[in-house]
Every structure is written in structure tokens, then in C-alpha cells.
Image (cartoon, rainbow, N blue to C red):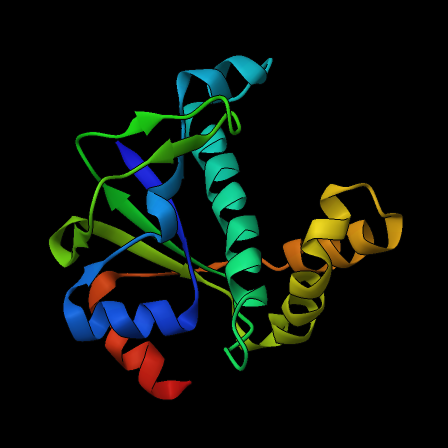
Length: 163
């Protein structure tokens, strides 16, 4: 199953150093039966994109918890055999056990530098946006208007070196 794991740039650096990725709390996002049922229409690619966007939003929460991190949303796409579905948390939420080795990483999705200001602002207000604050929702939308760039896992060390 393709699972999208929220991350930060610091976590990506740890991935390169350690050769494996450990998701915070084991939390990931995937095209689950509950997510598929929540949409009236949409093919597999569209629904997986929705799960990836859920992971990107979760990345904002991780960024908010960092003192001096690089404000770029990051998502690690992995292929794992077993996950625990958690529809009680949200339609796309799954739990992954343990760390994911580099060989199971399919791709890295990361904001480009032009998104940094919007991501920084969104990370500060993501919780308020979830509570319905219209100004916070606008700031979150500004960050989510930026598309995440796609990188192959072998590109990650070079990408991080340029940051």
C-alpha cells in the first residue's frame, strides 16, 4: 500500500543519515476504504493525491513544533505491506509500525523555496484553521496553493545539500 508520511526537512536529513524513516507516532495517510467511500467520484490517482495533501497538512503541524526548521512541507511516499486503518481519526489516517527502510521509499514530495513564507505563516495557524478561523483558513490555503515538487529518493542527498 502506498502511504504518505508527513515530515520536515530535519527529518529528511535524518533519513539520509540513517537510511530509514521513522514517522512521528507511526502516523501516515493513504487511500483507505473510508477515504474512497467519502468521495462521490474520483479515480485512484485523485484519491491518493488527497491522502498526500492530508500528509502535507500534517507536515505543517510538525513544522510548527520546530524552533528553527526550514519551513517547507515534506511528505515521504512509501510502499509498505501492513498498516492499521484508523478511520476513527480521519478517513485517510493509517498507522505504520516501526521505521521504513530507504528501499521502501517511492518518492519525496517537498515544497520549493518560493513556498517558505506561506508555509511559515500556515504552520503558525494550522490549528486555528481547523477550528474554523477564516483568516487562518486563508493562510492555510495560501500554503496549499503551492504544489509539492516530486523527487526520487536518490536525489534527496543532493537536494538537501542545496538547501
